[in-house]
Image (cartoon, rainbow, N blue to C red; front, side, top):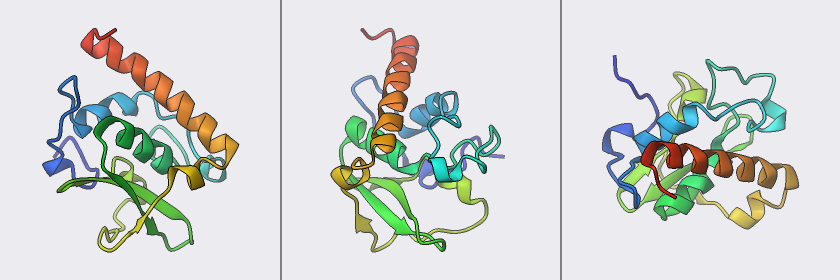
Length: 145
């Protein structure tokens, strides 16, 4: 069994200034994602076993901060927008596991705006919390100041 199940994990070879890949960030975020970082409307569905639930936009914009590229959205069956990253030819979705066996289509998706997503104060607060916790985790792992 593979260690990773998120969409694009096989080709997520891009590296940040510390040499970390999206797989490394998935590992770090796995210890940070929590009910507090989950979208409020999905908190009843969040659990340690479904840790990526409700984490998509704040995670995707955080990965954009780190790797650049674009954040795109997939319209889900319930009408919500699910966000993922595209950095050159590398397309990855650190939070795709929340959909279980449902296969999402990552073609012809809509470019997402940070300003639109962060117009909601609660989402911006969740993003800042996740960003700060991830910075600490990266410091602990790399020794970076």
